[in-house]
Image (tube, rainbow, N blue to C red; front, top):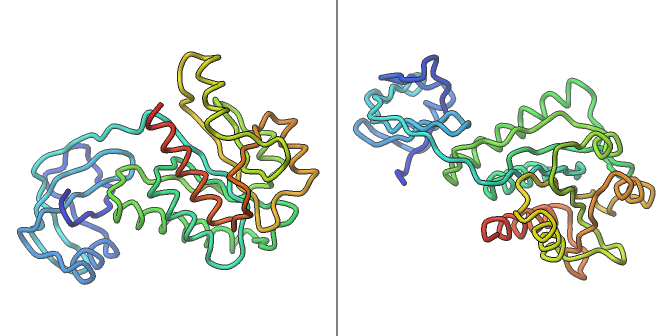
Amino acid sequence: MPDFRAFCSPAEAEPTAITLSPEESHHLVAVNRARPGDTIVAFDGRGTEWICELSSDRKNAAVLTVRFRQKMKPLPYTITLGQALPKGQFMDAIVRKATEIGAAHIVPLESERTQVHLDDSRQDRKIEKWQTAALEAAKQCGNPFVPQVQPVQAAAAFMESARGHDLKLIASLQPGARSLKTVLAAFQSAQNRPPRNVLWLVGPEGDFTPAELSHAKTCGFEFITLGPLVLRCETAATYALSILSYELQNA
């Protein structure tokens, strides 16, 4: 894979040249030190890539000459992460790791134990910041699909509205929580295929409340153990997505 990647939104499907935004131009030329003649992969975050050559290294309007276009195949499964909002900068890290692992959607949640509450203006700024973090992670890891960070939702309402998933999972330390391998094997046996659309729900520090966990069970969520140790929420999210991605890739 070439060293340089840049995000773009060309107005036409078959451009011969792409002019990058000031932000992308500065990152490519000033930060990554790309020079004319270097190969650049421009991508739109929806699976289309243009293999290009940097023809102008203007720091506010770099120009790429397109060599050819390619359409990347999406993963054969879709993972959605519903993440209760943590304190501090941990959500940024969770978004980045989720992008690297291949999550398609990220839904920030306000639960009963969430200590971060965002008004409309602050939420808009946070969503923009998290979406930027997802884009930066996609550029770094070579993911041609940038996950969509959705607006913050109430955890209980999100549990009720979650539709269209083959499996709905919730990370849990509750007695009776099953292993992911067991749940996936049961689905495979019943449906004669692996799940293609999976939702992972990860709680805040202190976990979801008993009432929320009961509500999740009523809404059809499977309780999944991540082992006997209590994990911080950012560790739990990365671990949960990693083992799920691994199992689905090898299903």
